Image (cartoon, rainbow, N blue to C red):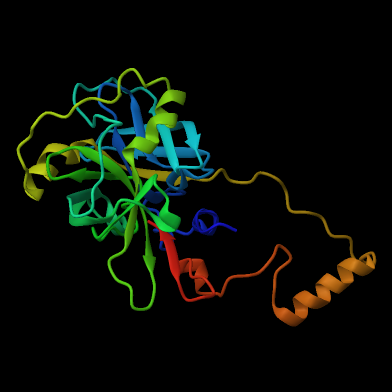
Length: 287
């Protein structure tokens, strides 16, 4: 299994945050696309949720509908019901480049707290397995930052915060998706004409404070809710013995009992349910 597939399949985001209202769970961040009624985020932030609530920092809240799912790049686009397009927001320049050493800032809702900003730099223009659609950075993103914007020192949207790697002897390794990888998702959402490749004008370098002041109002908190199951519990007949399992299945059950595996494959250690830890002591997580 490819390393990227492993990250996605873990589907653990540093543990789930407690819900503030019945049934809702804070799952990550996203950002508003200028002049539209759409939000871009990571696909793993919305997952398979039946309901999505999107809240702006100034108090607006909308129901979000996922209209694009790009599993290869972990990108999702939502449309917000009842929203009127805003004149300002994030512009997607698909020609924006990522270079090692450049300063970046990530805005989001870490640890189910209020909106905040962290800073770092690009350490590599590729991600795990030399994935050219990803990049590596030192900005210390945490649970809740996933899906939020990564912005360079000149106010350009360069990527989407995604996850991190924790390994013995390794520090400050976080990953993002390059904004150029959003081309497919934008095309599927019929937004390509609004956002394309353009030559960036010479810009003034901004402080973290100025970047936050300019962009934070267009960074949203995303909460999800799974639909409650309405199916009644299965009825179990009393004193009815279970039918014998086929010999091959009996062998598998015996192996499960001996090795501690579950029926779906190799079970992660118990603490992996909260950390996404692998058996080789690496902790590959999405935030």
